Length: 324
Ligand code: 13P
Ligand code: SF4
Image 1: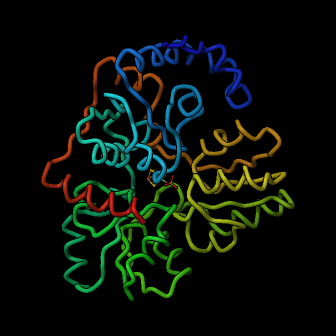
Image 2 (image 1 turned 90 degrees about the horizontal axis):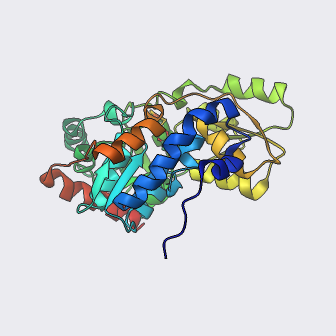
């Protein structure tokens, strides 16, 4: 039996501490329309941890970091998948669901890391270091994934590198993630020069100033941050790992050195934790809104397609990662 849909008013109870009533008024109508459209179209919404709380907590069916979204995308039982995230995440969902319709509400939702490297760059790196396997961060285009031996995310990068049993590995394209992984292994890591435009802006000085201003604060950092930031933090991990850390240790006061919406989304489930919020906004993640998710479901756009020759090789690299 199909149950009644939750009302926007009942959902507001969940997010009222992070969304002021005045903002909520603009969301309620779109939320109710999206819930009805999902049912009508047999659609699910995958949302990354950086999506705003009205998306993350009120319309999403599956939430998580890039690794969790990829894993859970394999088990989706629906005709349509709407990705509330950036374009490489929508491509990954399509790679793992070639027969489903995958929609991204805004085609301009890119990523500075994905934009930092081309398939030709990967081929040149292979020529330069012919014996080194290529590990490609999931934050890349399908065409770049197709040139790699295996993918990784911030959540499994070390395990993926170790799984290759190679003395030397090419790790593309995030220079800082590569350096942060190199600090944890004897494997020689050859890096590229890509950067996340959000995380590269955090500095060790930021952390020292935060510790001065908020004595006892626990500092969690994403591994896309510069190594000096990771070195000064109490813990570094993927967005899911940061969220799990807060749930497990319940620090009295915490700062997440990552994208703004993370703190809001985690705070919803941990009212006892005080979040200090010096956040950096990801302009690409923020292109996704309730309004364009609704339009995506109403108009069946924008449909994500991947060249079949590219898709087969890229899927192999993603699936190989999921077995590590
Ligand atoms: P996670 O896989 O840790 O969620 O990171 C994705 C991302 O884009 C971070 O900037
Ligand atoms: Fe890309 Fe950085 Fe935005 Fe993540 S936060 S999507 S890595 S630009």
